Image 1: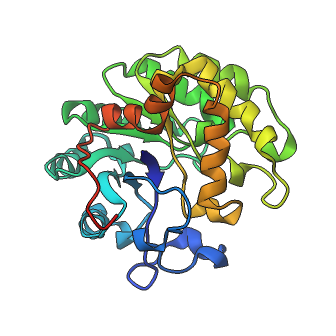
Image 2: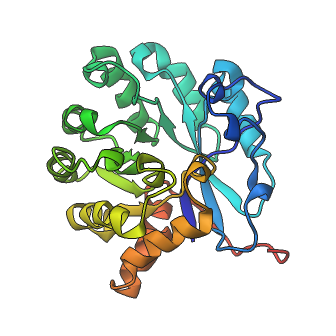
Length: 283
């Protein structure tokens, strides 16, 4: 089992501005903080959390030293891709770090059109040159925009975080559903089944409510392009790790064992080029 989307951070080490208004998360989170009484992944992909005070190499170096289980098998680092060609030295240095498998420039709070800017597109193209994946963290209103980006850069492998953050809290289905289907038409993009509990009402969501969104993602992408992710510990605002796993596993229950294996680890291993050995004896 591979969790394709997990964060760790330490506010005592760096300031994370986005945590200023999220008091429950304003503390250190590392692999040892996962609840051992529930299902645990064998390996995880660490996704940047804005650490390092703007220095992506500092956050990567810290993540490389995190002790498992679960093992950090891959890292998605932060880079200011909007710098275009000027981002090349950073991308090249990150690509030389064995655990760095991708880059994320968080787009969810950017103005419309940001992802289609000339500089950002040039920066994204650098990733293909260095064998790195581009993670996309966007809100549902930005799906059409990033579909154009994906179409314009077919040489880049993209991963959509959190199923494009649909408006579950307000029951919004369209245009998210159609926009996601159009994005899924592009063969160079996969999707993470992650982060949806925090897009719903934190205290009142149900597995049945979220299942509809997960099932739509599976229908348009196919199991061969979907990967399980928890978005832990952000997800703890709305759910436990065990409950989120159960929600995704419930949607997969009627599928073949091959499909379940793809979503719960195979796709992440392929897309992020992960090397995951057997768990340590103490696991």
